Amino acid sequence: MKTKTFRLLALCGLITFSFFSCEKSNDTKTPRIIYGYSFGMANASQQIQLNENLFLYENKSMASNINKRCSKATDKALFKDILNSPDLKNFHQLPAVYGCPDCADGGAEFIELEMDGKVYRVTYDYGKVPEELTDVVAKLKPVIGSFKDCQP
Image (tube, rainbow, N blue to C red; front, side):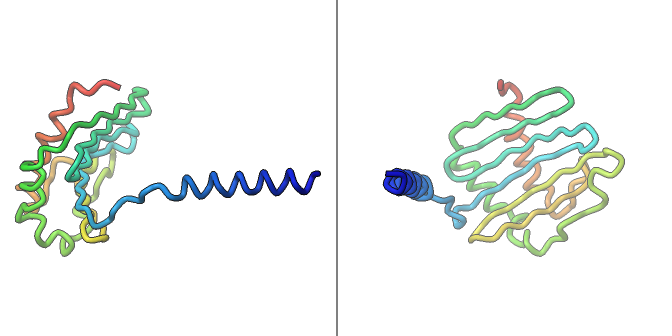
């Protein structure tokens, strides 16, 4: 009796595991851009994730006990404009780090680009945008700013 019960439980567990493992994985070929900033000593961060279907905003602060997450449908024309920014053409050739991001809690900004299954991230001092990224950051700041009324 114990053997049958064990086999039945094992079979149920296997079926359950199979069901959850069949969940569609993220297509790494779908372009994605993440832009944000953080302040380590304050343990606070804000970021916006953009893809062809969704703009997802996150604001976290351990000190203020804030954890906001909001989303809206992608403005496809804006996403395409950002994705085709000349600043992103040679993004993967830029240094991964500029300056001393978040040294002495000065903050850090970053842009991460995922395209064709590859992820590349550039991080720099908060408010000191590298010349090679000024145009794309100018397009991303209003997007993150559009979520200022986000409620948890």
